[in-house]
Length: 177
Image (cartoon, rainbow, N blue to C red):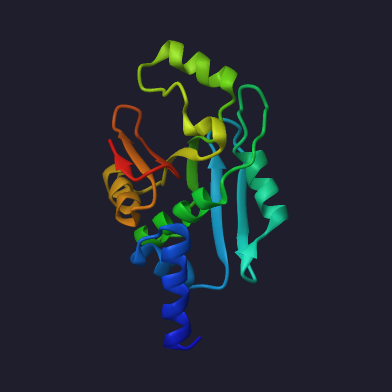
């Protein structure tokens, strides 16, 4: 790819998706994007290429939707592919290929309500219920470093939960807590 085409592609990504130039650069570096997951509640693992040949891979997205299902109810939901790009960006910022440990992916309204009755930190209209949020850890990486990597993308919400030892990332507006 020529420098001119690369820069034009980055500019298009910034304009179309509101990505920071640094994040657009990360996404444009490789023709394929892959992620690895461990669902801590089900024990299921998945290593998948979710982006190839200039597009999202439908079969891989389906596998991810299943892995990130509400483990309490078994309900699945479409996971926002932008969330996967954020995870990919975090992984690239960390410089690792380790799997993401999943604390919470999709949450059904029923599960979200249950969690709200048990904790103050659960939003009534959580983006987890729309498949636009995930709570993660990466083994061997301090959650403060994980949080900094996510914040550096300027791609959505990033929350640090030190007592529960995880970082929340979502595709909502850029905000930090």
